[in-house]
Amino acid sequence: MTATVLNVIGLSLGALAAVLMWVFPPRVQLYTDKGEPVVSFIGNATEQGLRRAKWQSMLSKISIPMLVMAFALQLPAACSTSVDQDFKIGDCLIRSSGTGSSDIVQIVATGSPGAPFYKVFTSLLADGKLVQAQDYQSLDKQSARTDYAKVACPRFQGVFSPDAYLSGKQK
Image (cartoon, rainbow, N blue to C red; front, side):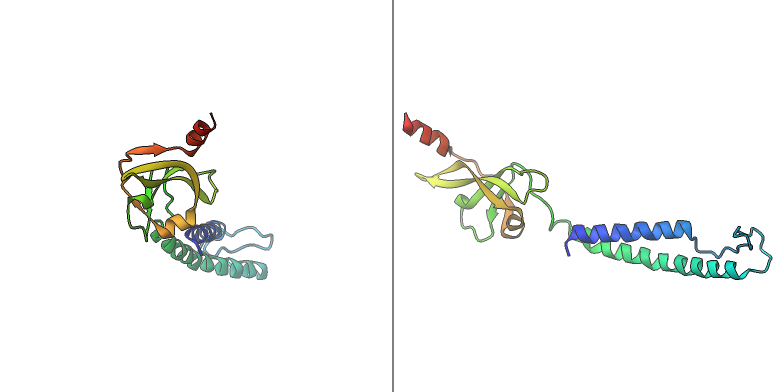
């Protein structure tokens, strides 16, 4: 399960436990024949009151382990926040198996909030100079998290734009 799923399950379970503890506090309330709560500390419980008290007692006892489970589900999710960390525009990444600065990509767009990819510019070596190729490539976010590492952006010594190059050739 992903950290987000664990968080959602944990928060939902915690919210349900909180509602149960609010509606059925961890104390037994006695009820009269008419269903009204008895405020005094002395009195004989009716059959209906005893049934209600049994349910209330059970629900109030369940809510405490539910809170513990909610906390336990959120703990691994809180510890794994770095796994789900997204990179931001301007970050430079290098493939884990990369060997040089020509393997560096720079994130230039992140797409819509739920988009599963980044738009990146690649880099290349041309005449011994590091050049940024301004050709939009897609990089899968999951692949970026697992196969790439964040690095300091190098100083590019030039820019190559395929669109500008091709439009200049056509004239």
